[in-house]
Structure formats: structure tokens, C-alpha cells
Image 1: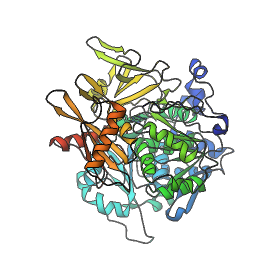
Image 2: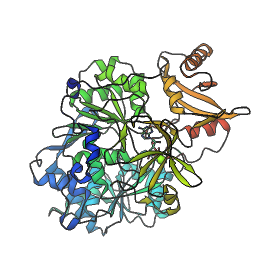
Image 3: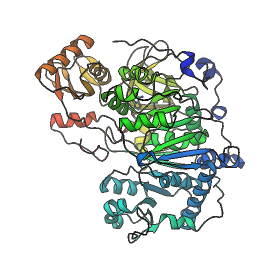
Image 4: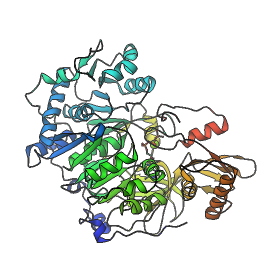
Length: 584
Ligand code: ATP
Ligand code: MG
């Protein structure tokens, strides 16, 4: 079931990539040089300065920094100079409210300008930005604001009334709530301040706080795919990793029009949906609306997106809608397509070529790593189904845990994907859980909890999360491999694979599949998919059972929640559902 490697032709590259020669870049890699940041006097470093202030002072002042697209694709643009002025006002307002260094400023607002301004403004003031996904219900909001110790929340009047007002008593640390009025002149909810009025008072500029590289800047909650979301702390030095990897793995260059489809409620939407593109001085798109194939193609073509960063679920949903809507447009500006968040099925990689003339480049990282760690680069041969090779400057390995600590797995052998400590965006730890933080490390190695194998050329191949892999009759079965095989069947749009108990083999494979439009769930189709899977995978690895699902349970960031499929199948407690997508 191998897909042929893909080497981009020079006409597909369109521009010389930033990373021209992988081996050469690794041999003399320097994070500072790769990130091309400015820094502040005395060795200080502040993300807001790198992302906004320095560009606003120079030649980029009048360049568009962010274009927000509203309903009907109506644009609202901010230049770098606009961003500086607006984030200065946010920072000044926060300081006037008494927000001190290291204190948490949260947002619950959707992809509106105020959320982006607050992110930068909070860091400018030396505070910590804590983004929340706006579709969360009251309980996940309460839990995160409480654990995060948020002092200020920026939200909308509607969200406040629906979700936050009733929580105020339970959140004694939450001193100020700034609200965006959805209708001008509408009544301000009691106990809140008007966001725009709070900002209006200060027009005197703001001197960005000279934070140290190790000072905390960001607090992110993980996606909750495997259990209770964890609060992950990141420092200002993470921007070195954001900028360097955006140049190397996403190939961001001057003049690029970049679109990251992730919501800032998740780490990708902040690291690569706010900080990295601005730190690289490109122009980025923020789509305020939800996923819709027609709309997305119109944005890619109409806005002349050159670099696009999205996620496997979105790509599979585009595939489900068929090629025809994609082919209604042309994409002459598009140069690089990248994906993160879940394993990217080889089928999806090559589908990119059919739809856009370009393959999707998978890359791997986690909330804890803060930035891309393993990637496929535009200049490097792409092996569909592989996450690629470590970012130059990152030492990655596949390790096995033994009685004596960890040791490297043999080439091709499955083990835990690990990273040598010391990359700039490594997390500071889990908030309030030092023991858990310690458990992630074995000596110098950070252990990711994901299983992978490395081939003889140093490409990493994802096998599954340690919690998700299936052990059947002594084999280790990768749910990703089985799901990818199922996806090659014409009727299958999405697949989630779990292990179910089996008295003989220990575990057997069960697959849940979502069908493409025009296919009817039924016995004949079930048999056909089973036969297809056996043909590709062999009887030992193919699913024993297949069930049809109208919609697989997914996190709001689009990841298939196999733990929930398992819990439901086995009648076990469902665990934390705070990040479960509605309707799943
Ligand atoms: P939680 O830690 O709460 O269970 P989560 O691990 O999904 O949630 P994130 O930090 O958002 O939270 O996601 C990182 C994880 O996503 C990785 O550990 C990996 O399992 C998966 N992932 C990300 N990118 C890829 C990829 N390219 N291929 C395979 N898996 C990926
Ligand atoms: Mg995780």
C-alpha cells in the first residue's frame, strides 16, 4: 500500500525555498539566525515586539498584516502600523486595569479582531495570553479560567450572557470582563466593561515590556483527545521556534499571503495563526466563518493565498465534497500546502495534487512542543504517509523505555517519538502539575506519548498515540495505517479504528466509518469495505468488524476521539467531553 514518493518539480516550487538543502541546514544550524528576530535591549525578548512593533517601525508599516474575512467575504484589513496602534491601546488598557507581569488575560471571542489584538496586547504588557475556544460550554470555560487563574477576560456580550455571567461568583480571581458589544448602543451586561471604551482612553502609545526570554507568555490547554485537557505554559522564547519553523517548514517568505485555518482556541491557531506569520512579516488571512468547501476554495483563489496551513479533517471533508468544487477555481498563487493535528493519510497527500497541483506536506508537533518539530519541506522528497524529518536544530529519535531508562529503537522498529530537550519553544511545564511534567522526561529526552518508527533515511512515520495502538495476537497494529487503507475505498470519507477485547488475540480491530455522499450504509457495502481492507492490509491487521457512523466523535480542533469510540463500544465512562464537537 505504498504511495510513490513525490519530488516537487521546479515549476511547482514557484520560488526558491528557504530550506534548500536539508543536510546542509542541519549541519550548521543556528536557531537565532533561522528565526531572524530583533530582540530588545539587554537580552530581553517579547513576542509582541517581534510580531508587531519592529515591523510597524520599518518598511512594513503600511503593509497589510491581517485581513479578516466576514460573511460574504467582506474584508477588514489591519496594516502593521494599525496593529501596533491597536495593540498599544490594549496593553495600556490592561495596565490601567492593574494587570501585572505574568498575570493571565483570557479571550472567549471567536475569530474577531479583538481576540488577535488582545493576544498581542497582553504579551506587550508582560501578561500571559490564555485563549479559549468560543464554542466551549460554561463548565469547560469555568475550569480553564479557574485553573489558569485568569484576571481579565475579553468576550462578547452574547457569549458573556449565555456562558459566563452565571460563573462569576465561582471565579473570584476574575476581576475584569471586557465585552465587545455586538450591536452598537446595546446594553452592557452588569459587572462588565466595554472593550472599545476601555481602549479609547489610551492613545499615547505603549512601551512594550522588556520581558526575559524565559518569562511566561502563553497558556494553552491541549485538545483533550486522550483525556482531561492539560494547561501548557510557554515562554516568550517560543517565538524563536515559531519564526524559524515557519520559515523552514512552512516556507514563509516576504510577500506571502498566508492562511492558517486553525482557531486560536488551539495551539496551532496561536503559534501559526497569530505569532509566526506576523513574526515573519507576511500578510495573513483570518476567516471568521466556519468550514465550508465552496467558501474555502473562493478564499484560496480570490485572496491569492500562497501558503496554506490546514488540518487532516478539513482535507478529508474537502475530499468528501469531491473535486468538482475545487476545480471551479484556479490557484496560480498557491505554492505550499501543509497539514497538522492528526496523521495525514497518504490518500489525502496525493489528493492535493489532483485538486491544487500540489501535495499536502504533513508536519508533526504538539501543544507541549510549541512549534513544528518534524516536517516535510518543499525541497525534500515527500513520502506520502510520513511526517517527514526533524526540523534542523531539533534532535528527534524513536526510543524504547526499558528498566534502565530509554534506548534507541532499531531502524523501522516502533517506539516512542522523543525530542532532545533544548529547542526554543519547549514548554515550561504543565500548569499546577509538576509530577506530570516530570513524567514526560527521561534524562534529556522529552517523550511525546506518540508512537512512531523511523526509516533508513531518517523519515518519521506515525503509528498512533500510545493509548490508541492496538495489540492483537502479538502484533502492534497502527490505527492510522488501518484508517488510511479504509480511506482508499471509494465510499469512505472518514474512519476511526479501535481495539476491542478478543479472548484469543487479546484485541481485535474494529472500524467506524463515515460514508461519502451518495453511498448507502448496508450489508453489501460493509462486506465490500471489509474485503478491500483485507486485500490491502492482510487478514491479521484488517478490521474484524466495521460499523457505519453518521459522524465520528471529534474534538473541536478536528481530531478523531478514539478513546470515546472505545468507551462507547465497551460501555465505559466517557471521560472529559469538554472539547467534543457538537453533534458528535
Ligand atoms: P491531549 O493531549 O489533551 O490528549 P492532543 O494531544 O490532541 O490532546 P494537541 O497538543 O493539540 O493535543 O495535539 C498534539 C497531538 O496531535 C500529537 O501528540 C499527535 O498525537 C497528534 N498529531 C499532531 N500532528 C500530527 C501529525 N502530523 N501526524 C500524526 N499525529 C499528529
Ligand atoms: Mg497530547
